Image 1 (cartoon, one colour):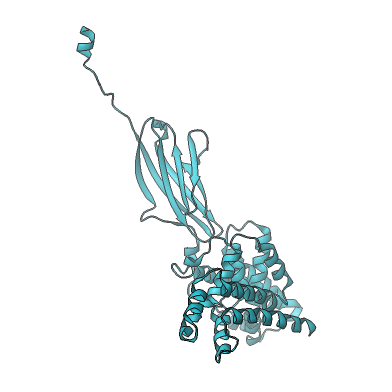
Image 2 (cartoon, helix red, strand yellow; image 1 turned 180 degrees about the horizontal axis):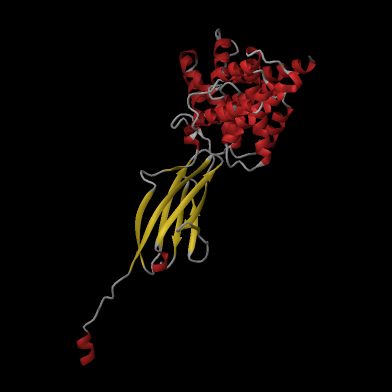
Length: 359
């Protein structure tokens, strides 16, 4: 109880900072405005423009490093730890570890701006996904809706939906978060299906579902469940209609992923492809199906927008062939191919040879 009192006091202090930042101490609908802010973030202020002095409203709605945003970020950061981390010490440890990550402030700022809009029905899982995959920015929520595709993929198919997630520490954290997502849904489903927790069946099912998703995870415990009850269980799996997860895989940012290109013998030639996707893809280059050696003649450069460029110095006839750029991230891979043709330069006579010989 003492811990709860302390936690409530911490959130109350953070809430009071927001009230002072907006000069709302004596406002008649103070509670309405604040409750809306804490649920829907700063963007909800637009509904209350007439309730503020113009200068206060303009400053609060526009300044990303002003008093209001700083106060909101402080409140939500405390909320993450208290509301979601009070019974999950591993989550608090994760937040502390990621506090200096390049995207920590971005995720916190997004929450301060939009409140619970992007936290879905499992804030812990949403926060962890946003922090683990640095490539997730605002466009993944609004422009492409890719975060929703990621959410559908991982909450339907479990950790296995992330094929190339080789970082064991990150896998462990994400598995913990998936357990938090699946636990209430799975246990309610087991209860409705009249399946009892015999010999730790519920926890075993939870481990499998978090790792392999609903269908494959439950099949792993099928032999321990009465047949008619298992049938009820499978029929009531809460799977989303969109389970492909394709849009979270790397994507070639071009109308076609195959093209032809020409170069000139002895000159520098460049081939470029741009890729996008949640988590910045790693790009490897291949020549006629074989890994391309990087040396003095072949150089690969990459830019922050996902463009990978292969530069060939002093192109030779032997450089003709098919060049493949293969982009890989945790969710899969994509390829783009260029067929390079090398042209020879015909000799050009720049002087009158007869005149030169006679001279």
